[in-house]
Amino acid sequence: MTTDSHPTASPSSLPLASPWVLRFAPLVAAGGSVLDLACGSGRHLRLFHQRRHPVVGVDRDLGGVADLDGTDGVTLVQADLEGGADLEDGGPWPLPPGQPFAGIVVTNYLHRPLFPALLDALAPGGVLIYETFAIGNARFGRPSSPAFLLREGELLDLTRDRLRVVAFEQGEVAVPKPAVVQRICAVNGAGEPQRLD
Image 1 (tube, helix red, strand yellow):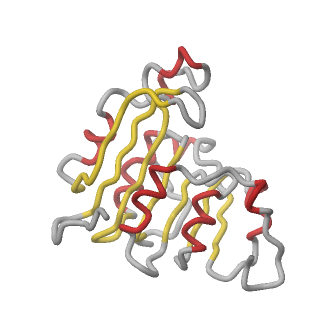
Image 2: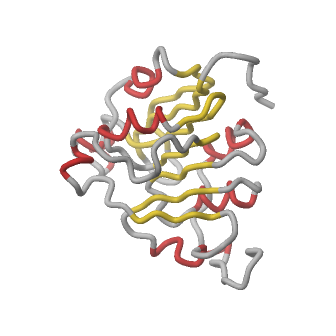
């Protein structure tokens, strides 16, 4: 339930949050803003909003989060992340420049030209939680194009020399459906070790 008069979708009708995101959500600084890129139905946007984080959801179609429009602490940005020639070239980020996030969540989405902007948008101490399909997934169905599948160790390569890796996995999963995935949780900057319990 939201704090205003706008209805929310029934919790039983929404997809469950990814166990990977649930596991590392507590690492995001209390009250820090969280970006859910390609937010879809908003399962992770809702998770962090319930955890009392200001949240920003970006997607080309905001229909899955329309019930959150106008909710305190929720900002929705409609942007075709792959549509413009500028974005294809790694151009304009759909958010104000310099807007830092304590957490950035990306699941089931890959558009490589956005990688630099994602890393630049992570505040010092901010947490990147990324999980999507990887090479080998074609045998299970879509996505099957290499353009939408992470290469082996690609998320490690992305974060190398920029973020401190807390956890990384790649391989086959059976739930919620058979797939080949790669996932990472990484923190921007050195400092105190993250609590994992």
